[in-house]
Length: 224
Image (cartoon, rainbow, N blue to C red; front, side, top):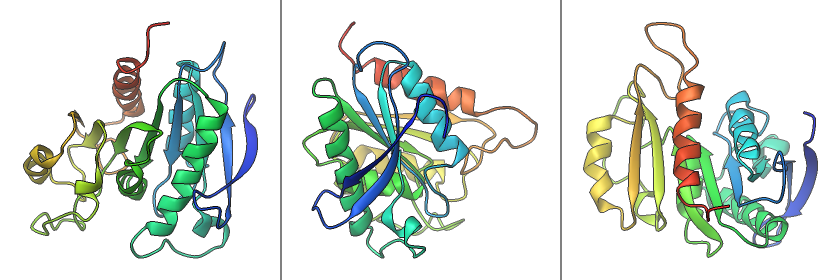
């Protein structure tokens, strides 16, 4: 555990199971909002990228909650249609709303976690979603159309994307963006892959991701 974090357990949205998470309280003062973070398919809430986003949110006066999808602790795989993972995320949103009675709650997902955020964006407590490396199509197969969760995005969305992500061709992504019903913004991280790993030179691309995320969230918070 990292200093100042709190281990928690909470029910899924339907109450069908228990989910483990780690809370990052705001670095100072009362929270101005909340950020719920969903990890990717092959990692968990302890993923360094997910942790760093949570720490950045905490430093920006938000309560951040990262959590494990239940399949991780059960040592299984994600559900085929991600409905179980949606239930987990809705439980995390409910927990965040109880911890942050006022102020917007945002959801953010890395890779598969972004697809789950799309499914759960209709939750009335979700003010907006952040997709961090959206897997729009199978690897190197941009010709595969109709991403299944895309039209389930019904809240404002920030999409942060590496320009060399084999799971999300930027041309294909720009074809899909006009189909979204709510305001959307695309931030492209140059020379970066699916997990924002630097291509063609060593640099910490996370700094660019963090700046985009915090700027977008800040623009949606009440002045204070």
